[in-house]
Length: 494
Image (cartoon, rainbow, N blue to C red; front, side, top):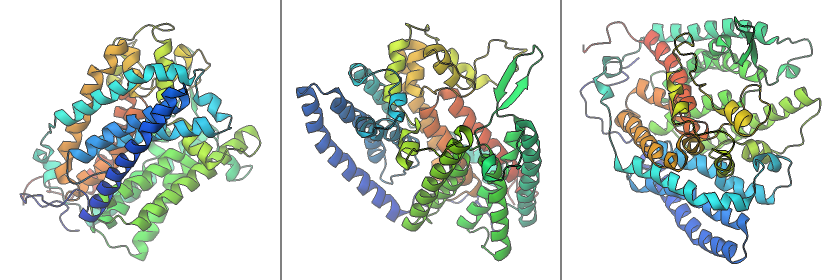
């Protein structure tokens, strides 16, 4: 294996291939211009006719355009996977595109997505919501700080050893098989009724010392997913041209994919499988290997996985094939920054529950045991939102609030400004830290490809602590396997 990072050499390679960057920048610019031209008459017609649905469509698209315009203007080389652009994607997916779905679809999913509110109430809250988006964007644009990660010898002098690299891959397979075995026992998974019948949404039930039942995914599930890091490492080694695809390595890649997909299949978790492919696509973009064919294949695989696993879940849990379309499963999923849900939460806090005054952000310190911190907050706010704010029965996940609503839950109107500015600064600092090394350093590029979705999109989509820990939980195992694969003595200059 050649050196994955040349020490001391000026890193001038473009973050994203020039042709792809120009294409995305031109396409993004045209989208902004066309959207602006179309949104103004939609907004005016909505105001003139007192149609709150049309007002919501216009302003929800505006909410997505704000960070997208910043992403297009702050640098010549447009990077779709830059945090500010993924934030825009989260808004477009969760609010803008969904606004059309809410107004045109007759699916039962619409009632759930409206969260017991209406477009008139949402329209009243939209000015504050949009100001929150502006605050985050300003924090991102105005404070371009970075940390010098290149000073860390692990990244500066990283050189993988061929033998140790393969050992790391087989180690990830072995650990995953152990985790799958333990998970099947913990979840009670059997193949008595066939493989397809084994796919269902599952959760581990653990009884603590006090006799209380705790629901979660369990440590065994974390171990079972480790092969996904091996899959990403090998696929990205092909992309970075550290390894040549041969019959043997392609067979190994197939084994890694099958093992990595078993627990997501058994637990009907579409996200983990999709993220494996997405990570490879992200790394391909930074190494200039991304083509339209690869993008189309990734989209087809994503839609297929969402549809198949979604229908299997409906069939195995309800005893019948679900009548939901791909659009219902994808656009109507509830993912993304949802202005409707944000507005519904704003209407209930502090009327139903008091402000939390920053307590939810402390979930980033959840590694501390409850024996030391009995009242520590949960990492995820989903159960709190569904159970406490909306008064619904909840077992595990609940309804994630999104980062904007989390600000309101903590500090009301003030929480839509200062925490959002700080969030923008945080997202920019981490991205600027890794940006010079993307497409140059194999470990940094693969690490960023692995964490950027959880770090950016899911932080916007879920809540701050959950997005933070998703990035950590996906990044640390990868760093471990990269360390196993590192050549002895590569921690210093040769």
